[in-house]
Amino acid sequence: MRHLRATAAAAPLLVLAACAAPATGPAPQAVSVSPVAQAVAVTGGQNLCTGPAGHRVSYPADWSTNEAGVLPQCSWFGPGGEVVVPEASDVRTAPVTLQVVDALLAEVAVRVPDEVARTELEVGGRSAVRTEQVTTVGLYPEGTRITTWALDLDGRTLVADAVELPGGDHERAVAVLDEMVQTLEPTAG
Image (cartoon, rainbow, N blue to C red):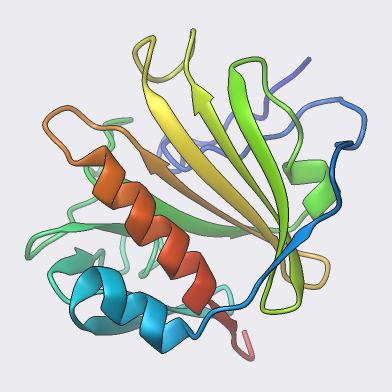
């Protein structure tokens, strides 16, 4: 298998890609939730962010996102008042990331060796794949938990993930990620 390597600035935004057969298993499950109700359930309020790649997403009122710079605005999300993307480092400072890639869902949502769960879903009428993995080797220390969503955006794919960071609340980050994906709205890019 091969994995795409991102540039130094984008390395923490792992895009899962490999040579593999399409996923098989149970039929996709439809997810029907009110984006506003979902965002308020976890966050007690919400902020909105519009990314330059053509998506708008809600995130918790007590979280923040990065400004444009090293990465496009609305790429990294975390608790607290400021999300800083390091200038020249692979260090990830925020538990949740979003990016849109110019690839089909089937090309992005491929199985990885340390995957422990996979669910095919529909979110807002769009095909999606949610995976969970526990790392064995790679960018993060062995045993790091990562939850990744890949969501079809009509020929492009939104890749969103929550990575377990030292001292962070991974369960909350995953809950926030799951609800952020539910609130996602494509915009006129």
